[in-house]
Length: 609
Ligand code: NDP
Image (cartoon, rainbow, N blue to C red; front, side, top):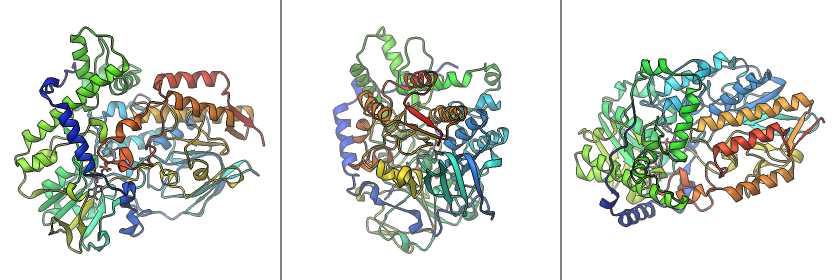
């Protein structure tokens, strides 16, 4: 089916200066001086939050003392990709180490009702052709995604090395044995030749630091630790029937809450949706996979689709391009393509093109605001649900049941924007505009610490490289890497994250390419009989300089946004959750890496200690 442009209000029908002024005003009235410090660790409310797992029983095991080739911190997408590429490269001795009870990362911890990926499954879920699997629908359910983790782990024998319910406490380079010494909360003594840090950006849940937070005596939990024993139902069958006599409040209206709220509205006796900033919520169009389409797929289809998505998201659809993905993420490109075609494809400078994108952004957001008013019956509620920011200031969502939920008589929107968050919590519930609302349960859909504070990024207390130097001290001013892969002074350590490398608009594609490179470096070390591998200082400095010279100021665009995790809640010191990207783009970066590999990996030292 060919994708059609989505009708949006004409540019000359909207008052862009007035919209911009409204965006700035909405941002300013939410800015908090404490920025990211407004949040608190869940441990302040939930005992043993870090190690408790509502989904998988904890099994005692003996501590492990051993030498291994590669220790992989994490068993989410980064960790899975790392293990897959190690297996493929014939490196037999590796382990994934994760606090969760299985593979899955955020898809393990998040099991809330309604969980689906907001990105198209055919692009987002990796290794579809390698496993012969095609997702059952465009936006796959969370459980289907986690099953795919298990499918990959089973098919490529990744379970045998995995250490679950295990947290790495410290990583210390031992020059005497040219290995990383790894301490865990299970008393293990692992000595790994190489370490891959792949713990992902959203691995530490956070709670809002609401005054009186710990005084609430009712039931409560974070959305990433859904308590089905309390609500009833399961992630496969989210029939939350134990809520039928319960008054529930949910704090937050981000991507997680948007998916869970329709289920809470369906089952709870009373639901209070506590919103500080609304999300944009488009139609979902979640179509089941067409068997005829599935049958027609030719080898290479997934990479082609991912490339098409990347073009729509981060580049531009040109003459004759088809938008294969056809959702909210590619809408600006899709709509612009039609406009530019009608104009005979004028030659635009980058600035002119970005200005056109900006106008289309306003048109799309006007469409989304109009959608609220069409569905939500109470005008005041509809007004409060309208998103006033550029589309990529907050993760765009799509859901067909979200807005209709606010038409239910027992669902009430509590707009806490005027107080920059929930005013206060009490023993019995929460206070809003001087009124105490009594509830039985508070669900915190309050997100994750997505931070540039390094120790929190990797969730490892101590990382010490050569001469006991802490990585956190070494990078206090800024991360410094070669290709985003490794850093001088921390031999044999790889970063599976988006630092100073190429960015593909499918995060999983970026991680896949990165870990393929790490397997190539480990293989090269083995081939040369080297035990210590690291970038030279000169090569690293040159790369950082090159990154700076070619960088796109991605933070510049989000700095003006409504506060949120994309811009460190508007904080001054925030470097960005994703780091710096290679400005010339994904394909230029991949070409550069391929040339670097073919040239024998210049700028790296391979030594035998
Ligand atoms: P978010 O950080 O996006 O949302 C947190 C919510 O809590 C926001 O609405 C925030 O309001 C609100 N909040 C924070 N503090 C307070 C306070 N003091 N009072 C009232 N409200 C408060 O977390 P999510 O878990 O929703 O999503 C995190 C990320 O996880 C997503 O953006 C996405 O990357 C990923 N995700 C992905 C999905 C997918 O489909 N792939 C699905 C779900 C999540 P405010 O906006 O004003 O700060």
